Length: 425
Image 1 (cartoon, rainbow, N blue to C red):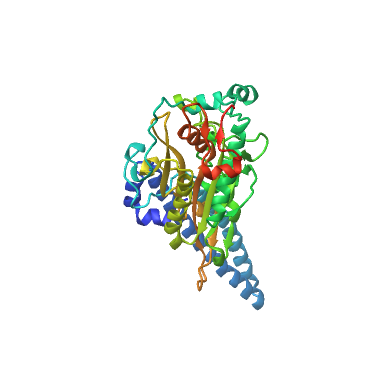
Image 2: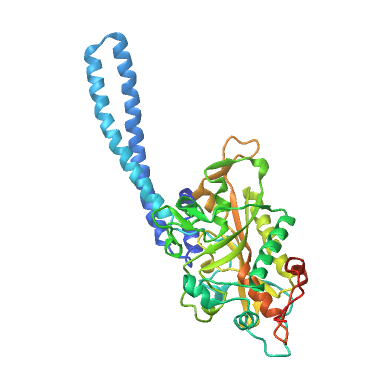
């Protein structure tokens, strides 16, 4: 959530930075409602001060035995009590109106985020490795998984409908091998592993920005305030919700595995036929909670941690900085890591690494007290995929396929999978 005082002092700059993110008109609405709220608050303060004065007068009248003055002051105090209650109700309503507007305005992009409205204006900043040149016609992951008896999408449809994968045999083992490999890697890079609930309360989803604006993308559990987890970012970030965190534990770096559930799969053509875009997928996540002055360095650290997984697996990838209009709601700056997929003859997103600054911390009320300060400040939060497990599996299957239809197992995964090659033999 944005700071209303910053909206008031940097109005035109913020409008310009948000022009590709929508909701610019909400800024003027927020400022109008805030002005009304301040007027009500000022009038309420005047009434409150008058009530305090009357309380003193009542005390003096009682002490002196001035019954006439006491009766008059008590009558005035009763009138002010009713007036004060009306103003407090008006102020509460104005604050709720202001909050309802602010909670739908996305985060402000950092100054170095590329300008533009969609992925066409993203900026490539680095590449790793040259995509493999095949001396045979490569197959898609759909064909390879089918030929090697690693999945059965028709059984998944029978169980749950379209968009829910069933992996079997080595397919299931490869998925688990990747999860364990990623977690071990992140722990080696300084993250603490957390095991989390897979059902998330509405207040936690509000804290990270999924609610109220994106409720239609979530799977809600009937007759409860719980939703199926869309990403481990939510639970990890909300671990310190409504707390003042000890300065000494910052930065706090976490990693967690979770299944993720989203309704966004649908009319995406080729994406819906395999494991690229599904309703349920596994993901290993990184989250950092830190002091404001640490967040840019932590953003780079998180990016490098996720990149290193693909480097160890020797998968070609590139990193792009997302433009203003292509970022997620809570992000102030996002790097996407895109892995090379031969069947698409292109790079596809496999991770998003975002710095949210204090946007989520304001919504979730996560603060810390800087050393030597009596006042608290909001922390900064960062999150990143490390990585989307299904897409990593796809990238390995397609990039490591052999002419005989088998798949070489990356060296780093061989101790987890206990094999060097996946084949029917």
